[in-house]
Image 1: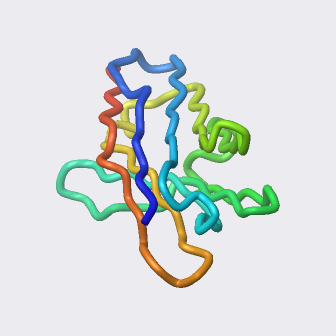
Image 2 (image 1 turned 90 degrees about the vertical axis):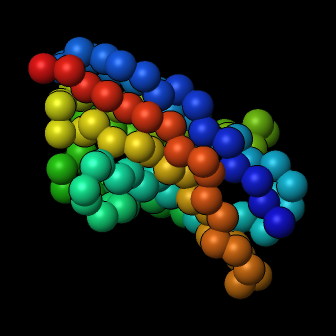
Length: 117
């Protein structure tokens, strides 16, 4: 089992920045790729960014050039640096980890990001 805990959400004005963190614990050796998802009220959860074990990254078009995903293996932590935030980025952001051995999936509890106009 892998446990994921997010932090770093909050209220920010449009154009501002936030950095989300996701700390993994438990069966760390099982963690393959990691991702950030978000879910706005009344909408489906969507994939925002993903980072593979080797560091390959992908982003949804709406955040390209503004968000950056990274991993710090020594701290078992994944980050999402969010710059130039827009009101439409408002959502609960979730950390997700794929299990290399086919278990899981693993989700964090979510952290609220609110961007005011």
